[in-house]
Length: 303
Image (cartoon, rainbow, N blue to C red):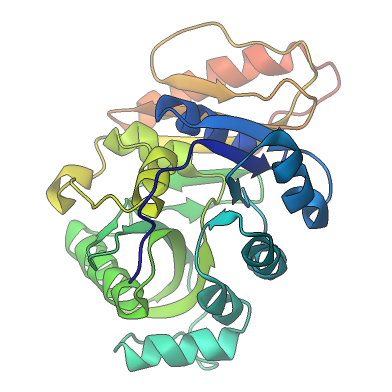
């Protein structure tokens, strides 16, 4: 579990949407000058050198795209801020990753599974082998996710988190990953592991007060986890929507609602949260109506 001995000073982030914007904001909070790269990933290292960056972050790229990027960074002598290449490669191979998780003692979602709902959770790991899991969430559709899950008891949440942490700890990785499990009846089965950003980090932020993006950058620079697992329980309920909004769309301030909008006409992310599910529904209803009023002809996202 090696870790870098020098800090990042200037970072190039791939992507141009809300995810890249949030990552740049996290970098700036840590004193890292952060720039976005909107071009092809195979030009990222060249662009990083032009801009004087000493590190590249893949943003929300899929594992298969991150593997060659990590290798190009290695060849160029630029730090790749993410999961190491050998583990990225395993994440692109379902059989290989399942074998690693089986070796770690995790149950797998097999061919004969009941096809239950998919549960996802983010995990943070440091170079000393410590792992923390964040509140489980569920994608209700391509456009919407929620956390925590009303049908997942606190006992099963802890069991799921410990399972996921055991698997991630066995890999010896550092940083931020997302684990996916299938919940069928009283059983949980491992499905997949993905690197870095999922686009749903706002759920973690609003429910725990921890910024997973900033924490990931700290961990990748050799810092250790300081937050206790008990401090990462969900404090309330939250729901996230992915929206396509016009450039001029704005959201007035108010409690329990937030819009991540890069201002480039790309995907925006709206999150509503509150102490109770009904608080979330009420706040989301008013806010979505306000946002969509600026987008004639666009339909309100479904529940």
